[in-house]
Length: 168
Image (cartoon, rainbow, N blue to C red; front, side, top):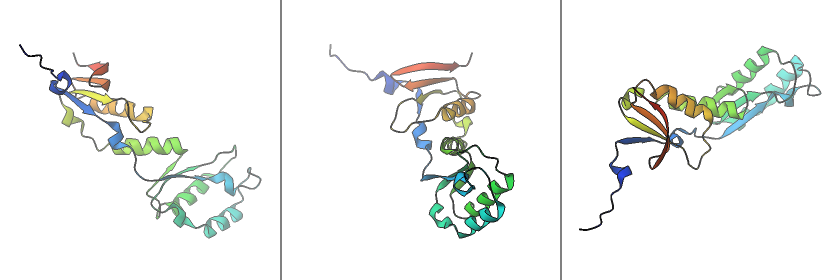
């Protein structure tokens, strides 16, 4: 009798889902309102509008941009709207928040392209290791998206998984 090596992982009925495939593409940048405040405390409307009118918005061309204020200051809502108005025609994406918020928002947008019904009655392994740092938001989002359809969700690699959900 011959010793035959059988790859049980390859023969299993597991569907592997690699979240790295949905990692946001493109450069990410932050527009910090702090740089336009008087003494990093106060927004003076006339000075702010003048600064924005002379800013080279092309530096944000095709970038994903987060609008934030990294100091404790009171920023009127219209100021964020004014920045968004200038960024929208050149930037790939514009969100309010820091770089982490930007990454999470873009990740959720990318994951929204997944049709949960494509995974109906499948045993899905959400890949856990990779080259890109996948935020927790993505794991929560994919779990919410798949749970109504799948037979089970596991985390990790097909050869070593952690059970997350199993339909009864």
